[in-house]
Length: 271
Image (cartoon, rainbow, N blue to C red):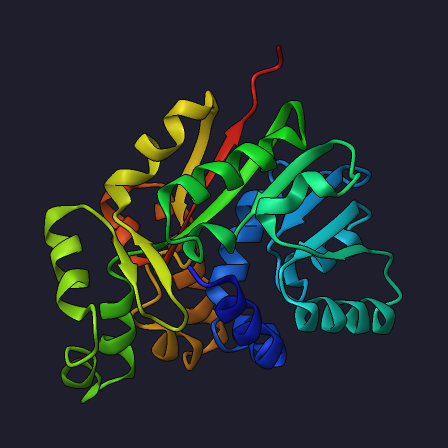
């Protein structure tokens, strides 16, 4: 991974990243639905790689003590602007997740690691990012990490085509991405930035060495990513029906590949 490449992308696209969860609302809706089961007002939250602060501000508004760390100064500046507009208090740092130990942050009840694991293309860097994040988590605290699934690229082409697949297959790395799906190996290479796409079967083996107690593993868009526009254009009554059905299916492993992103929630050992 080129750190400068990722930083430049988000510095130039912080507003686009802020608006992403308005254009694609199901990720935020279902993710906060799951997180809200665990997070209470007054809890301390560290959001590592949290972009322009969508999740950080959501929990600050709920009365949590939130610290946001992101590689992109553009993201941090936009988060500061949004916090001021909403009259919310948010501690913010522009820093690489691999340099987290350079910040005097203390320990937290909850640690989010949502973006870095799909921008860190080297396995050793992903492992280090998790270790550093867990160092900031209290014993017994909860860890939330997100991944882009390897089927996400095909979901994107299916819902935004026709014509995208043929173009994408001409791109560098496309054949390796297809192989990663069939071989269950994961993919690293060109995407919107240099990225790592994980096969869903590899999430738990990757996290097993860290000694976490698994609480949840779910698709962050539920079953709705592929038909997002259709559901968003439905009547309010039908929309709610799809949302409620999707909530019931979030954690069924056979439906994970219906989502573009997956989240693992685990508990750090108390001792």
